[in-house]
Length: 278
Image 1 (tube, rainbow, N blue to C red):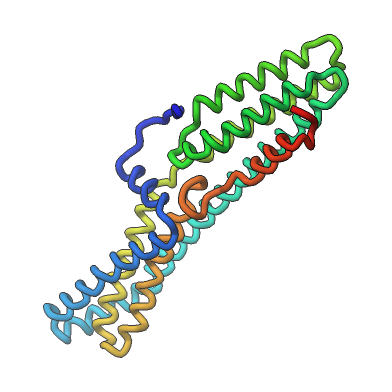
Image 2 (cartoon, helix red, strand yellow; image 1 turned 90 degrees about the vertical axis):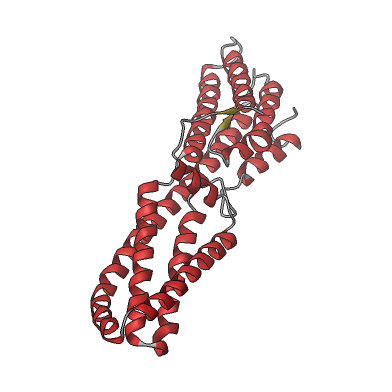
């Protein structure tokens, strides 16, 4: 399988894509382990090198900053998560629209004067190529040349049949509109797969989480060991929030990915002859 490539990405973008390909459980475990390791080490270090009086002074400052830093982190992560989930749902909608366009073409192919079996056969070959050849490539944000060839063959057949004299003008128009809809929705699906999480925004959310965790550690020094568990709970929520952000960052990658079930149903119906024999 040959993929239709994309422009060169930055190393940070590649890192985000690599992380987004992990399962949500793996992401949560990685972030939790990393935050737990360095925050615990930083707490012990600061407790050893900073005197009790200085800890109290720093704790007062940290307490005043806690609300502002918490609000900043919450706003950034909420904004990014909402934006990414919206993109995720839009990708799901695009796949559904592609399946709907395939169904319309399949039904229109049964119109009088059409060589419907040829159209349905090429349509089934295209959908099969999408599911078996192009779908794995979507995880890397690229398309598939073989699928593009199947699309070209389908478009050629549909337009050739629509141009035949025995096909009514209204049917010919419906055939070309349905074929165009398939091409457009495929292009939108490829665009959704190629979209990257805005890495500067992702980095800003990550750094705000780190700063919030550091501020919480300084506050824990001032409050004492009795409050450490409560502060640890706040710190634990930060990596989980960041893990969720990355888990939905790429709509066709990871365990929260968009699936091809609408197209699978179309292919099954084509093979069983529900739209007519192949």
